[in-house]
Length: 177
Image (tube, rainbow, N blue to C red; front, side, top):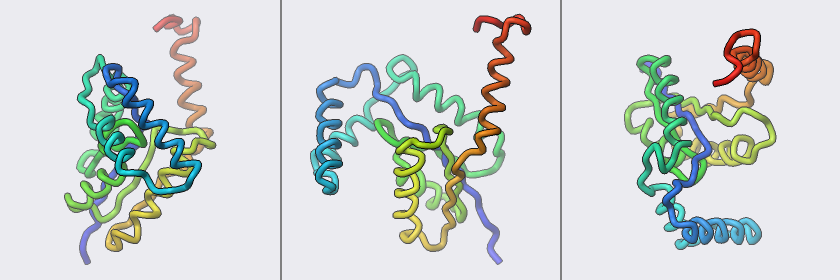
């Protein structure tokens, strides 16, 4: 029997680089809003604008969110040792979740676990968009198991936040960052 090869994808929200032209982003958001009200698939113009924004050149200065997200991703990747690993973004950054799933499959992943930095319930990205994308990808990749590590155990998230608060509380001597 063939051994399972695990891949992990960490999904972040994605940010708009500071030097990306505002009119480009405004046009993209306007087209997305129109599509949501008409329930039509994205137009070619929307797909082109989305790709342009996602692939806009980025630096730590122009997109501090991406830099922080990639730092977290690297820490997670190193703790997973030999697991195949990729990042993905919901919007404004590349690669997309679809691109990252295909990339891991192409490198041999037979099981993919997708997780996100968006911990709280009620978010459209984490509760609706990511599951919809994965539901579309599963039938297209029948030899691959794709799991979504959601929802988060809110007690564990609260414990992480409580620990962070303790680190900065006045009695620890770390009242300021």
